[in-house]
Length: 262
Image (cartoon, rainbow, N blue to C red):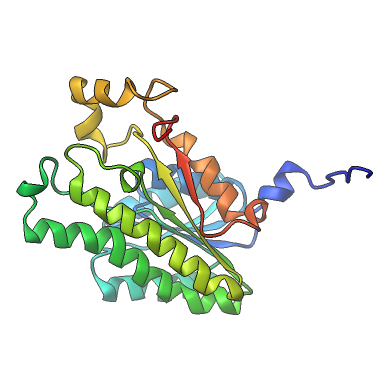
């Protein structure tokens, strides 16, 4: 059988021109790098985090580099603000094609016995309920535009719990199942839903882990690629999932963890 030649260029495969992408928790860390990468590949990017000035600063920098971006602040724990985020995004760019549920919370680090009800509610609100509700708010626009891609930023903590991350692990395991549920239900509408499960990535969010030498050693000693990862090792995977390169991928958990869960 004669092998079919691939004629699409790399840029065409990963091209996001004309696509509108909302990224939560986008003012720093993994979210910021994804926003920059999406913009470089042609997307109109909505930068969202809790503080408007931080959103505006990144959006301005992206525009200065030739990309298209706008900042819309929203607290993921506030349903009214999530609705405003979606409404303003549609008013600005006409619709939504890509959603990255990146914002997360982990207010406690230590034994699960030390996690009180308020902390548990905050974790589940930010890490599970907000992605669920925001995905629902984006659904109608994505369906009307012929489909879309939703990317959940999960964690290897949802695969195997680590000391000090008990309820965070529970929330990410829930997010993984939410990914599969929405993928199965929304696939007929052309909406793909996948999750990225990073390992230990050097960000401010994970600072409690990598600043402590004994904890960092605990993690890196069991990783085949014996180091922590960087944000620019997550963004290309997000680009793949946002683009037509992953058109037959849905309901999947993609691990970027240096081999931690092997």
